[in-house]
Length: 130
Image 1 (tube, rainbow, N blue to C red):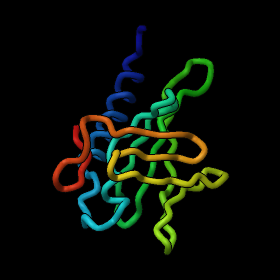
Image 2: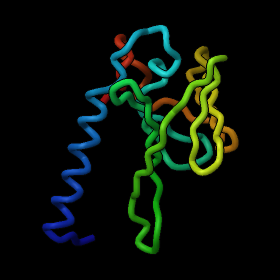
Image 3: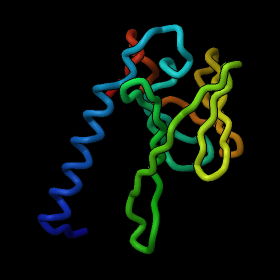
């Protein structure tokens, strides 16, 4: 596959941006479930990979999916919200509930299925491993 210089520069900027997000990670308190689920996740059903990260006080979920005829990777980012009773969800135009099984380190997106952590799990301070 041959890429133009502009495409290479654009891809490089995307990669640098994603590396910055990974380095920022979720260096918050250990008590929050959202802090513990930060990192890279992959679907057990072959669905698009996701990245969960903290940006200021907000937690965001970026879904990497292919779109269009060229099947280019297109990230879409949503706000991960937590209700008073501890339930998590995101609004993508419709509500997607998010559950975390800490013992198995598995995220469940209803109705999108289960996700397992990439790169061997959390680091000690809650940041995603590279």
